[in-house]
Length: 213
Image (cartoon, rainbow, N blue to C red; front, side, top):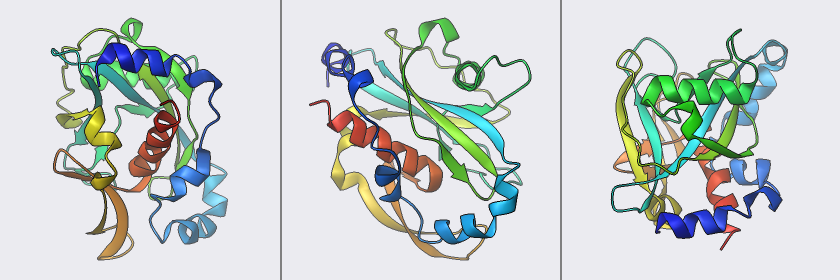
């Protein structure tokens, strides 16, 4: 979709109710509710993070969404696809600011270039004990991405048409920190399998956008 057309549609997004958990649940791993029940006490002391679902025009003025491939490391989110973003720090004035700051640090898009359109529904991540708050944002400029080499392996640019294409919603067998192999709902985007909390947040973004046209 041409980015100017995308902007016309998203100008109405503030007045659209969030699909919320009903949308997220469609992409929820089957073991998720059990994990949350097991971690009721830990959830009371969960950390907080903010992430950005950032849409932008490419050089042909077509609409794209930026995701990141995280580095391989000894952690629960090693080598996974996610949104740019990160945990709330003491210097952050709000969780929205944390999402903007981390987006700049991880992919190089200046804070002042991003317009936040809407706060989306938070997601709890059992393995890392985080509440993640996603935001829907746009930048009118074609970004000159600069990846944070310490944390980001690659920047993944997804076309809006691929993101909205229901054919890219699949079922995949994945390895988890709790089970060797589990069948989960996932997105296949640019030949990357996106599942778990990121897929749940993407599902809400997708359903929200589809209400606009």
